[in-house]
Amino acid sequence: MKHGGGSMLWGCFSSAGTGKLVRVDGKMDGAKYRAILDENLFESAKDLRLVRRFTFQQDNDPKHTTRATMEWFRSKHIHVLEWPSQSPDLNPIENLWRDLKIPVHRRSPSNLIELELFCK
Image (cartoon, rainbow, N blue to C red; front, side):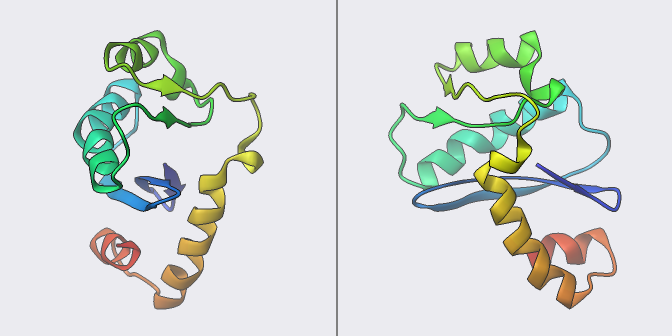
C-alpha cells in the first residue's frame, strides 16, 4: 500500500515480478484491506505462478494486524511473515514504490486516473 496526496495504491510483488496494482478509493480500514486482499491477492499469486503455499509479507500497520485480518489469513491458509514493528525501511516493497514514484512523478499526473494509468 502506498499513500500520497490523498490517493492510495495497493500492490504486491514476488521474485517472479509484480502482481496487481489497485487504486483504493476512500479511507482504508481493516474491512477494505481484507476486501482488497480477497479480490487481488490470489489472482496476483496465480499470475506470478506462485504455488498455493506462499508466505505473505506486510508491515505492522494496525489495519494489517487486526484480529479479523489475521483470522482472514488463517482461514485462507496463508502464512504471514512475522515482522518487527516500526521497521518500514526494511520492507522490500518500499524500494519498489520509490522506483515507481520517480518516473511517475516526472510525468506529472493531474488526477487519480492519470496517476493509476502512469503507475500501471
